[in-house]
Amino acid sequence: MRNLKICAVVVCTVLLSIFTSCEKESSENFVNESPRSISKEVLAKITKLNYNPNGVTKQMITDIDGTKKEMYLIEDDIIMSYDQIMSADLHGGIQSKQYRTTNLVTATNVIRVVGYNGNNQYGLSATAQTGLRYAIDNYNNENLSIRFELSIGTSWGPNDILVYVDNSINPNPNQSSGIAGFPSNGLPFTRVRINNGANTTQTNQHLEHLLAHEIGHCIGFRHTDWDTRKTCGENSNEGVSNDGLVYIPGTAGPGGDANSIMNACYPANTDGEWSHYDRVALNYLY
Image (cartoon, rainbow, N blue to C red; front, side, top):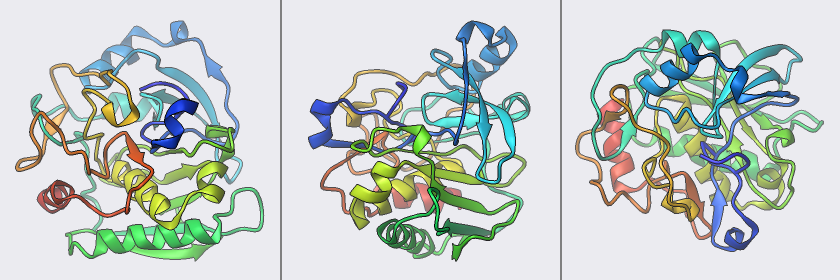
């Protein structure tokens, strides 16, 4: 993944009329450290976990509550702490089709999602709140073994997924982006951040897609087109090694799934709805 684009972020200006970047993850204020300062131990583990070790940066993340934590930004839209990286499981083999991470949500079957609506720079717009409701409804309509409970407000708990605006992930107001992370210790990743471009310029359907995608990362999904990133107009590979990229049976083959919510980038005409293979993947895992 390149810097600046959902679990993909900056799409060049020429492509903006065709593609909107689906993901990118970071937080409010951060300072990048040189890749050379990242230990060989961490890079080796990132490689074993089947992520691309190229371009990894270390950042000091400032959360919405003011707390700071050192995190690693991987593939431009995934953030993980040192402990999360080093304790991640290694199981399963390399496969070709749709994919999940080695860690899933196993410690709870109810996931509370909070759409932050504070009257400040972190608050979701009315359109973003609607898109979030659509995304949560799409998950719950699948009757999975996990269920999402959505509330809109300013109060959240330690294991809730908090969805809010963080313009530092991509300050360009004309580019839409979002970021998230992967589960750990059987619990979902607890932050979904979108920038102001997504918050104020995207439609309900765009935000439905973007937020369903980011929540997908929070519960363990990787990009469907990880091996090409062709939905972003690229021809690049997010990285494969010997462990950790787990195939989801029954999903699309090597040609990929052009309609998947979990592709790295989404088209301007998205309706925000699951593809057939997205539904297969969700119902297989949960």
